[in-house]
Image 1 (spheres, rainbow, N blue to C red):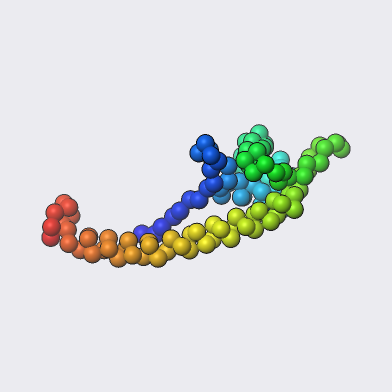
Image 2 (image 1 turned 135 degrees about the horizontal axis):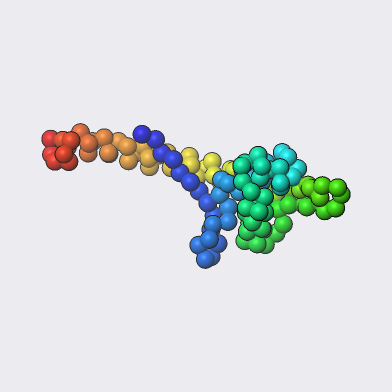
Length: 126
């Protein structure tokens, strides 16, 4: 048995705007220099990726992408300086939050093992 935790940020209405999917998307944009290519790399539609970025920007009130317009392919995006710092901050928060779950999880596992040792396969006392 192991613990898996999903973290995400929600706005005041309870709508998700930041989680692992958005993190992966922005990291791919950083690598690909294109929202379209980042979406393809993650196997999601461009419109979904665009919506994810738009939702994040609206929730934070700041741009996370520098979009390049014009040219033959009208393709290209880079992360804003804010977005680069935000990704670092979010990764650090995510790591600390998950590490913080280890101690309560270890306690839970220990207590569960004691509980399991005292019951039979039908849930009654052994």
